[in-house]
Length: 397
Ligand SMILES: [Zn+2]
Ligand SMILES: [Zn+2]
Image 1: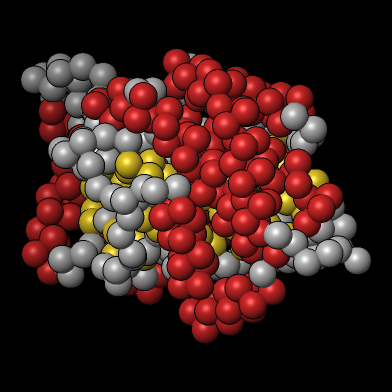
Image 2: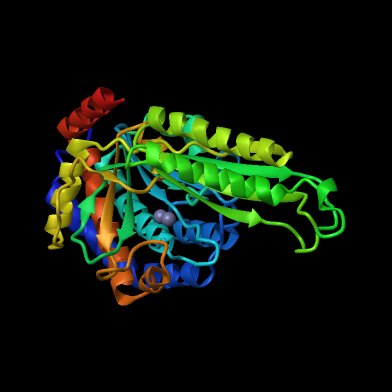
């Protein structure tokens, strides 16, 4: 049996552990920042985070859920609920750590260590998930599919934000379906015998045109955006192979599926018009985020306890997607947004990558680790919160 816990004291001590780890967490955040690795290539970041956890008494298994750069570990303090911390550490191609996942990775690891030091007194279990490839590969999805989150009372995470906005908690966001379109045509001399060629770049451009025409006839909260990954080899050769990559986003699974089917039709139409063949690959489905009101309230109180300016969540849909949405449909989930940059600076910009290793970024590592550790302690020590969170989750799913 565990004595009735002094929650305020536990939180104070968890924050003291984070302060004690701070120099090393910040060093690790900078090291990951200086070595950006892209989806499923996070060999260094995953190894460094795993090493840090192991050195702090929370050994983890690298290669969890069939992904070489994923990790998972837990520390059990006795009977009781399980709380999960969810780390990310991948970077963006061409932009480095412009989503600040170096902060996300190290702050979650710091929170996990802080809670693990106290778990023997609290009871229950703390888990740490190392989830690769948030920026497209859906590294949380295998964990969800393998049932890792089935018995988790709450999944806790964070994401750095910009714009000089007050700290907050996650509301809703967009569901995402990624596509890769590969067009196959027929090469020819672009001047000598173009009539013998079939132009795979025309097929891709027609796909863009079809999608752009469609924009007028989708809801204003739909987002469709794409790039040309491969556009041909030489101007004097009719391109016989091109590749485009698109993301389709909408506020619900039903909406995004309906729009995605129309986008798919645009690619088929582009191929047909250009006399080409198209291969369509659909990527991992990112579900929209299910906010959890009781957990949001608990986390906001912890943000306020640190003295950070904060705002409550609204019903507005955030114009982004995350595979934390998939986790939020497997168990009650909460995530803090902590500001690291001023007005006009937001994720996926060069300036945000700079902010991710700035004094503001470093402060966010420490603040977020404390916010998450305190929220995890709330979940582990407060049966009423767990019941309310579970009821809210069941009502929303
Ligand atoms: Zn991002
Ligand atoms: Zn991100």
